[in-house]
Length: 310
Image 1 (cartoon, one colour):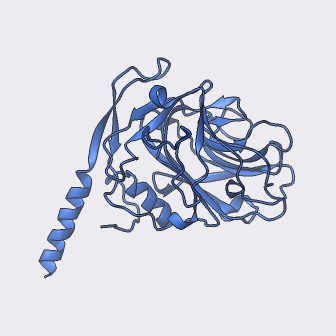
Image 2 (cartoon, helix red, strand yellow):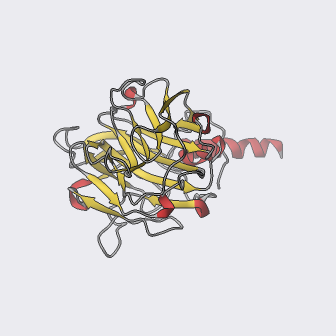
């Protein structure tokens, strides 16, 4: 019995490691990689069901077949209404094969952002705001990224300009700026404008992640301090440093759109973005973040604590 169990575990580990596959990226922008670049991308767990799905308010697979009747990128979350409009981009011009993936029929691809003017715009929705000016609520945000340029790479932001009444939160890597090195992963929570905020940024940059697939996440417990923010890379906690500005009283619920791949309509991601997820009212644990990373394509070469889904 014991030998049988060991044999089954070894077989499962071998099968999971064999899920690592190669994908061919075509139609790459001229200012990034050359056409038909081979990009390593592991497959995801077959049949995995996200146990935190009920708290999801945004879930974008970034697949060319996953658009609604209006031609927008489909939101598959429980909210279901936060679809993304193409701005200076299109399905035909921007989707890429990121590698064979058995997680779902919609999860085989990613959208390529040119770093100049391309973005996905999601109309303002209360579900994507996490404060009322005095009280913040917990939330978790995560995405896969293949960064051609890791400096100033914007995964998602609810900030359309630097003016007052236009800023709520940013999940990105940093540009060169006082207080943090360019290429540091950061979650920045704004209090109505770009000068009053709390944030954490990774103590070490992630510039070495360029031209490789990695999973990034940020968790906020809602306590209105920098200690309530945790950053993750490939399912593991990143050492981070606090950075603040002004006297933070909480995020506002503003009439501001969410942009995927863009901040302030000025700073743009240069690379591919996939599997964008936001959970509201829940600060996912380290194990839960690791589960998302693992089950949507994490590498068997790391030793994170994960739950095994059959």
